[in-house]
Image: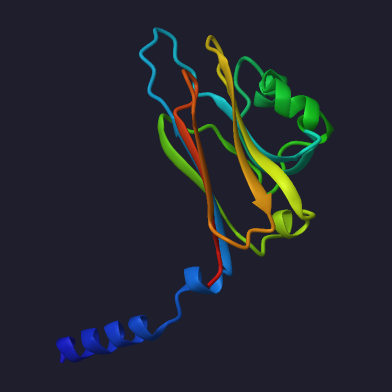
Length: 178
């Protein structure tokens, strides 16, 4: 009897539509935070946003920072260290921002995935844009990477850039719906 139930469950799972196929495509950014061998390591603050050809921020994708208060104060105190993001968007935001803010990430690979019908993307006018990734670390450095793309995405696109210290490999992959 258990094998019939398992078979029935597997049949039902196989017949369910794939949500990835129904999403209408993907907009995926992968970010590598390298492991650093330093005496005093602090996780980096990272901001990810989309800017247009005039270098104006048009959408925030993620801001990873210390969200809890500590003996040194609130984590928002150091958000201006993400200089480019702060000048273009950060100083006008009231943090935390729902769907954008998150805690700092440890060393490793991280990803941000959006459906192509996500409001932050559908609000973009046709044109050339860049995904900007900025990292800043206490007792460390600051780094900025740019991943260009065209919008709307009618064909698959990809871009990659590699940082020198605070960021590893960052990649953008846009996969339109079939």
